[in-house]
Amino acid sequence: MNPVLAQRVEAGVIAALAVVVTVAAGYAWWWLLALFLLFDLSMLGYLRGPRVGALCYNLGHSYALPALLGAVAVVMAARDEPVTWLGVVAVAWVFHIAVDRALGYGLKTTRGFAHTHLGPIGPARRGDAR
Image (tube, rainbow, N blue to C red; front, top):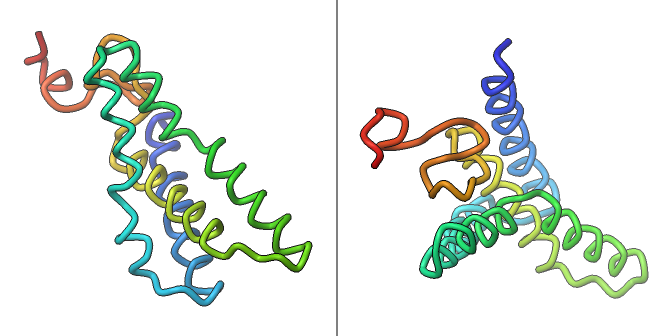
């Protein structure tokens, strides 16, 4: 299997698992959709140029930060001090990243928004990029 296709399929499975975790935890599935665009605020870094934009976007679209947030939620719950919204945000964040990756929107390079680790997107994919 092509490695890019494998990553996209894997991301689809992660997105589906995020839905299952959300519902199993007793939350409505629509929370995933309600919070979906929140994580794209990381694109605002592109207002400062492609290097800052890629850094901000990649921080917001890497699994590391939602994993850390989820770990904090688990530790708080283990201490009988649950902060349930942390877990919901962490799973919604993972869902967002997974859906993006499944659709082919990968981590960005400093060449611009259309150049990702999963290959070019938009005009760059068609060869129309300048």
